[in-house]
Length: 516
Image (tube, rainbow, N blue to C red; front, side, top):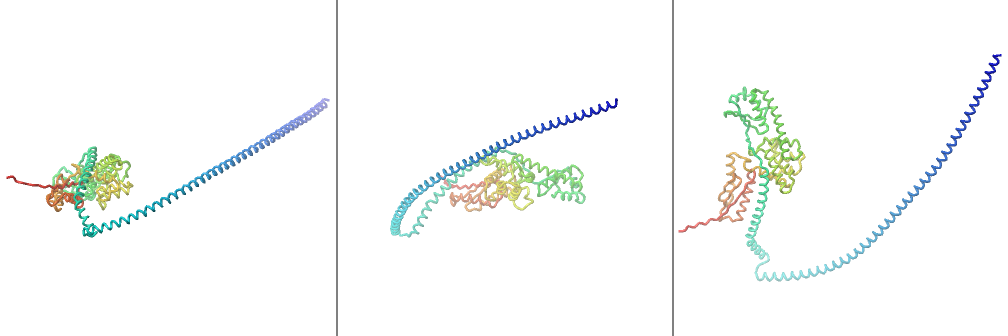
């Protein structure tokens, strides 16, 4: 009984469970159908909205394209109207020009007609004048008895004789006036520049000497069988002169840099005391490096002192070599610096570029650093060196032409030549040996005495001036002026001298009477 009731209960429970499952399935199906309907309706609504938006967008684009097309059409119409206006204006201008041309043609025709009439009138008058001149000329020939050529020759000779003295007087007066003005202005410029640049000058000898503590050191320098002195001369490229002069050894060489290396190396050897070939070579190499550094420093110091800006390292090195070069006992590097400052000051006074002038002055003698190694004079060597290292044309020309060897193309060349003459000729700058000094004085006087009419010649002011006395009977003022110019030209052609030489020709008349 219990089992039957338990089975019935299980069956009812199963039926109830099945019914519940079916009911849940029906509810789920209804829910899904409702969701499907909602999704469908939502999709339809979105599609309708999208369709309306697309239609609106198409309408907007259509309106925009229509407005753009209308704007383009309006713009084209405006351009056409503007072109029509310009064409009308141009047409009016052309018509006005045609009218003006017609008026000018009428004026030109009238002018040409009047000119033709005047030309015919002038031709007629010219013929009448020619006839009158011919008749008058015939009358003059008949009265004077001279032909036309004879009369012309006589007239010209008379005019030449009458005007010769007057022309010479006028020329001398104008030359004297111009010379006075030029001398005054140039003297003021030069004196101002020299006063502004008052540099000290140190005259150096051209012979290098080395002091030794005793004559015994001479034997040690020579060495056994001369091996030390031969090694020293081979390493330095100089000649060592050891003579009977007490306490001095002379170093001789054409290259000032090598001579300075030899002098310093010999001083070091004497101070060290160890003198043998290997030590000599070692000290010469070390001294050479020191001199190279000194050369570079001297060149850089000169560039900085003059303040000329960027300079090629090779040019700087060659400038430093000028520290060991002398000209008439004047240090060439200090001379170049002095010329640079003088050139810059004079350039600024006359309205030129002072920086360019200082650069020209500093580099004008750069060829002297290599003239013993290359062929040619130092102006050409310096110009080639500067041109090869990118210097400007006026810098190269100043180096090439500062001794008046070429035609001056730039004003800076003349300034450098002037400053070079001032630096070389100022008192204390250069000195010569007594023998050379006397020889130069004799050459000046002998050249002047070789001209006809010169009675006496005296070289004064250490050869900077020459006084020439000419005879008053055989020489007039014009001949005296010509003699002065000829003597100056002969000096320029035959002599080599620093600076300038002033020639003064004196002509005087003396009358003597004795009262009894």
